Amino acid sequence: MTDFAATRAMFHIPEGITYLDGNSLGPMVRTAPARVARTVEAEWGEMLITGWNKAGWMDQPSRVGDRIARLIGAEPGTVVMGDTLSIKVYQALAAAVDLNPGRKVILSDTGNFPSDLYMADGLVHTLGEGYTVRTVAPDEVEAALDSDTAVLMLTEVDYRTGRKHDMRRLTTEAHRAGALTVWDLAHSAGALPVDVAGAGADFAVGCTYKYLNSGPGGPAFIYVAPRHAEAARPALSGWLGHEAPFAFHPDYRPGRGIERMRVGTPPVLQLAALEAALDVWDIADIVDVRSRSIELTEAFIQGVEAKCPTLTLASPRDPRARGSQVSFQHPEGYAIMQALIANGVIGDFRAPDILRFGFTPLYIGMEDVDRAVATLAEIMAKSLWDRPEYRARARVT
Ligand SMILES: *Cc1c(COP(=O)(O)O)cnc(C)c1O
Image (cartoon, rainbow, N blue to C red; front, side):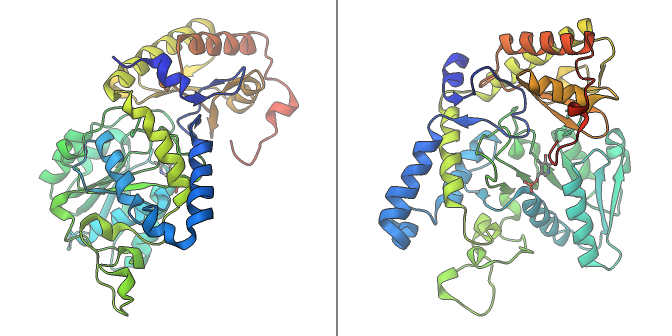
């Protein structure tokens, strides 16, 4: 059983804060500053350019990728780090479409994160030739699979509501219809058990600054199933995905397996912060994290529904059907969230009316749930949110 007091001690949470926004930006592990400082001073500072070999910077994207692979049920050597999630979505989707010629539809759901849909739009625009993106309601995805579907592109856990797709079943159905799958694990990796190999996923992508705590701007990851690794054509054919980057050939030849999904120079400092953050998984078991997260979210829902009758649950009531976050709706959601933050309980807001609360057992306990419920109840009962400064929209919500 995971010792959650021990995992909590690994994180720096500012005094007086209950942090329910690890689904958007995970907090800092205490070892991150020293780890990054070591990379800056002892590696960059002392080794200069020799650090690429001596400090192993060039191998870091696949070395760290293997640590992520263990968290998402991927085979060794199938995950590589780099770029942002939007870029990785594009790469995975382009490769998947290319592997399924003759079919022209990328199918997704209307709840998908806008950037994933924007990237798909950008791709079909570049491809031309009748390629289209089709979105349907999340529960209509299965019925919408047909002989035109090239790729089913879904985010497993909905960023707004926390609704969770059945990855295994939908992958099986997609394959039965002759489609390939691209799964976005932005709200899954580090939040709940994922088994990309067991589910038969073709491609998967995800970010590390949410539940994997790599810090702002931390790199994304991409998984390619071994059966596609040597056939997947990289749309973003950068030099570090080349078979021999330092041969400086004028012609592109894809690298071996997952290496071809690298694009350019890896973010060495951000990867150092991520490596520090991944150490928590040496003492945390994702199965324990999931069951504790369900206890926390159940208690939060029960508390809020008992004490805040004007808030409406926007997440599935069945804990198995949602990820590690809970959302409530209210027309004044933005101002309510600002009032909560001013009172030391940090969640976030998603337009038009969603209050989001992430529950990450690595550093959140039942006392945080109690405090969040009590603070929210007081704000609602006394309308403390009803102040002009809480309505003023900031650039990031
Ligand atoms: C957070 C998130 C993103 C963000 O993409 P970036 O390129 O890292 O900014 C994309 N897709 C989903 C599903 C997300 O949850």
